[in-house]
View 1: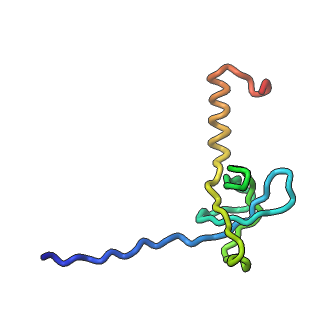
View 2 (view 1 turned 180 degrees about the horizontal axis):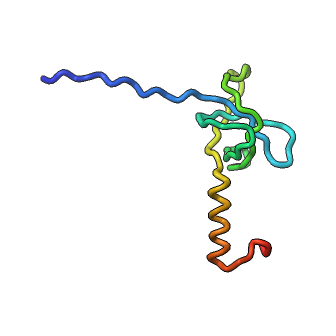
View 3 (view 1 turned 180 degrees about the vertical axis):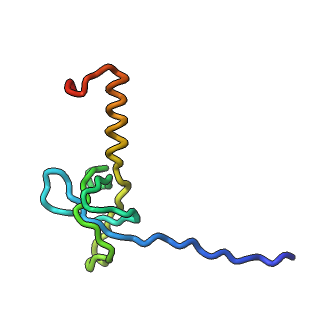
Length: 102
C-alpha cells in the first residue's frame, strides 16, 4: 500500500479589527476582517438593520480587550469606488443621460 503524505494545514490569515464610522454618526463600531484596510476605505458590513456601508476610521491589528463579552461582526468587503464610478459613467452614457441630470 502506498504511503500517504500528510498535508500541512493551510495557514489562516490573521484576523484583524477595524473601526468603522457610518455616515451621519460620530461613533465608531469595531468589526473583524481579514482584509488589508486603511483609514478612508469604504466597506460593506452587516448590522442589526441589515447590510450597511461605512468608512474605515482606524485599522487595528490587536484583539480588543473586551473580546470575551462582545461578538464582533465581519466586514463583508471593500468597495472599489473607482470601478463603480467608471461603470456608473458608462451606464449613463449608454442610456444617453447627462450626469448633471441625475
